[in-house]
Length: 583
Image (tube, rainbow, N blue to C red; front, top):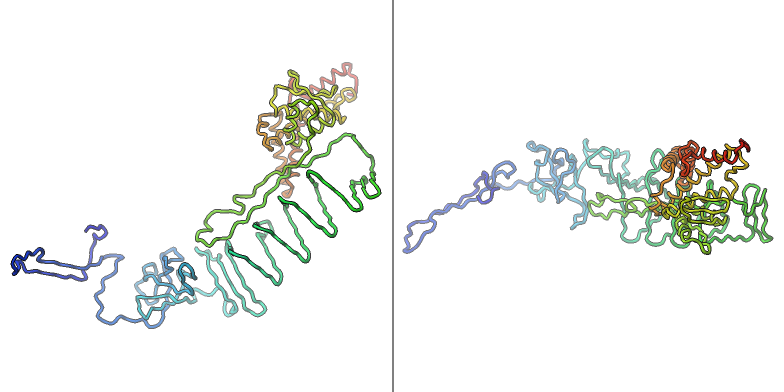
């Protein structure tokens, strides 16, 4: 046969034979086919419709409905086709094997069946269903409903829960636990509508959505049985959000609070405002105006400054003006941006199988940049120093070094062959002109540490201090200068000056190792510690490690190759050739 799939056994169900007289009795009548056979056949074998002779008696009629059990292939819970039809095993059927071959496909009656809309409840394997027959025709069965039986009992015990009306589904594959449910309780005084989703619950309103609650409303999101944090709440509003609370508003946050406002912020408090901060408060702005109607008070211990209409009152143990010291600037705190909420299911099949997360890939963390005043260049200032101002403005240690430079009027020079030094005698800082601009900027930080120690009176005094006291003071000063340079380097790299990474300092790796361990130890001791406090613990650990390295002789001077304790000890010995001074 032309078609390979027809090369099989067939059964003839009709044959028509035609014979024509040849030669014909009609002159010149040519006969092309004198004998023809036409037949109709059907395939024979497994999976083919069996042959049945033409019915001679009236077709049987099924009177009334019957029940049957939904069946399908082994290992399946739901077996259906594109029409939502299922197969069944009738109780009287002794040949069926309770599988996909037990019957033809049976259509399932439903409350509404429109074109791409309606309801759908597919009977699952094992359920008992009611089967009716169109006009009694056994070849046109249709499922009209389902019934409970001793093997498939109602979920809620009856008649105990007779006032419950519900739709309760079951997770497939069935784990015996998962389900979705819509339930109505009609018991007088206990009326309730209950909606339960095993995993995800989606509600989508294409237009407006209104909610009116006549009593209390409670929401619990992600709180686990062990009371630890679980799920998240993300809300995205395309327009305005208005909240009017006619009584009190209470908010408790166990973690952090990050608020970002791109427009103006106006707050109107018509009564008292009290703010208690257990740690530190920082406020950074381009301009700050503070005005009070009657009094402004600044108080630390027994020291205070009071401003009122009568004047300014300053009271304290000691009042210091231009007596040294530097105030700390505001930092660049880490800020976690809010996530945008994920949209609800569109209703398109397979929507939930597509990977997605609120915020489009996770929360974004950034460091806020505080505003800091940087003094303008001095008249006639070397352009290289001016360039350093722009670089060091991006580093906390750099800004502090600039404050020291400008407050104490330190002069600068770029003489070759001398290295980078600070000479307290003429208050001059020399920068090595052969170094890269970033290296020069970091050298600036180091030398301004020496300048600060000198002008603040905390540098070692080779004439009036004993040998050990002098050596300790100078070694601490040198190690502090290296620490400030390392921290300035890290701050510049974080702000985008990648070229600063080429600069290496003694004990730099040891500092970073101790820093990381210090942060880890602080977080282990206090899981709720702030990022700023954890970083402070890391810096303290790093500083201690560098100080230890200088004291232990791990770092040598660039000019003599000695350890710093030996270098400054020799300097003291040279200043006291006869052993004078305090030992």
